[in-house]
Image 1: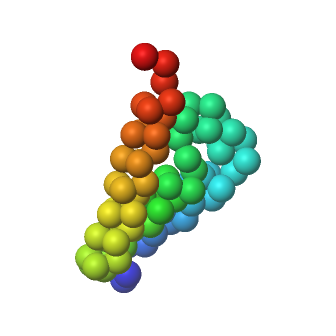
Image 2: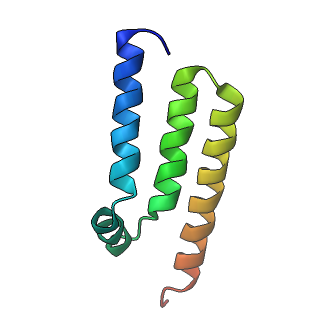
Length: 81
């Protein structure tokens, strides 16, 4: 990435990555049923898309989508009727 705007986006994603790897943030997200690792993959997918890396973005988004759908089905199956 060469432009100032692109650099700002990269910096923003670097900050987001650090934040999502922060233990306190991970605990807070986990308490709300959000997996920080999946959030990181989703952010990487968006970063790749904004870089023009569409195949990688599609792969990351597909992974995140499949995993969230699977977890939603699993948690729904474990809820009392």
